[in-house]
Length: 309
Length: 309
Image 1 (tube, rainbow over the protein chains, first blue to last red):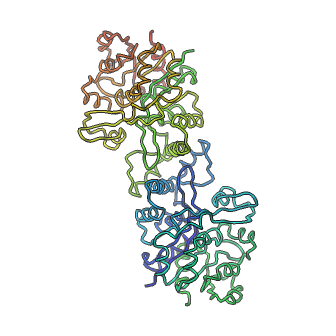
Image 2 (cartoon, rainbow over the protein chains, first blue to last red; image 1 turned 60 degrees about the horizontal axis):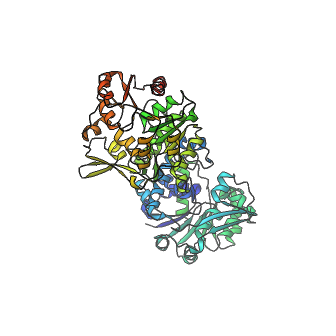
Image 3 (spheres, chains in turn brown, green; image 1 turned 135 degrees about the horizontal axis):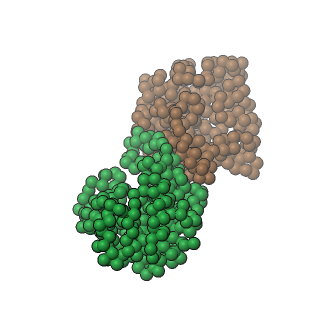
């Protein structure tokens, strides 16, 4: 049975891995999660992308919003607002338990990957989820002279600033977290999830040991375009790609990942890009890629794992 | 108009101060709150007694339970339980916002009294609430060789252990928080609230500068017996007093506070103790002291503030 590694951002990745674990035994999957969006809010360490994956795999996740826990309440947040605190980050009451638990573990000296592992165990998640690094790497979004944490740019300011530059602070000194390279080496397939290439996948690649491993891996590397019909399915990938001068299309995605990809899965709506992408030396599979429910996730996971070598 | 200082524990004190601020202008009241019950839970600094006062004065408090915020939900707590964490301390979702806010302020370098002041301001509380000290003083309950934090003894273990000793760790080095002695010196009346004498008021007196000020004050010192008809109205005061060999009656309370009290208010059910208490040199007012609603709180506050000099 094949071992799979998924490089994952938030919502799109969460939807795909939810399908993968229904196609292969969950313990064959290792997810390398983006921790570049992590930030501290009200003194609590928040890992939005790791949470999205945990919620998807534990079954706690909300199907409707794509983030947070299903049917969560927001009473703590409402009271924080009443106390005059910022409430742009939509902390649910149940969601908060994860942040409080992680924060306590980190304060007790656990690394981010140990805390993640502990939370996954407690949520009875069988797949392995590792943050890309235990060292802080922070995705900073610049708009001219202004500088934002990703969540500030995206959630607080509504992705309205023109992005002129994105940096991954701390990446020079960051090592992959334990098990990351080993999982990549053991994998037959490495999946680049349909996540934001600049803000979710590039932070993972900003860690040079991971990027090197991606270049030299013998695993089958398969991506799924997060751009469908000229738009990001969710989030600001389209805006950011355009801001940075990248073509907002599966072809733009293929070019961005061309040093790594064996195969790119693109949506039926984008079938016309097949030939130009293949000219880059990347195989193309055309499929339905928009995951609106669990069945779509399973179906796309099958497409990914059955992609031709 | 007379300035009043109230020495306060949790629920009983919260009910009384709620009445006091309806009898005198709220800014004439300073509450010196017990911080001996403070503890760290899931990495968050919790101040149960300060919270009880804040909730009572802000109108957020629950009338039914006497602790926490009215109509609070417990979804975060339920999820913490699902994650395998202890859930004996009933953290409400709205309540949690206060703990998160305080914790962030303390992590940002504010003292406990600064954080308390900031929270009170945000909750539009006009009276001044000061913790007895900015230094940690921790009420430790011993049962033979076993040693518990007060909240562990009371909430987690249901006050079932026989108490052999109570200590106030750190009291030797603790100074009164800023404004405490000044408020006592400016007060015409100092009220010892109907709180647990061993676990709520003694921690305040364990700070020698406060205890000295109580001995020498020219203010009118009035207590309200927390023991009515041989029982504590709420909490374990009766058990603990008995364990430590004190008489569980208003007379026991009078003896305990005899170095400080000018006047003790006792319940009508305990009128028979009047003469013996007066023999200690303490004036006695017999009144209805059980506060089941706001009207009772106002009525008792009037009795306290109109007590004969």
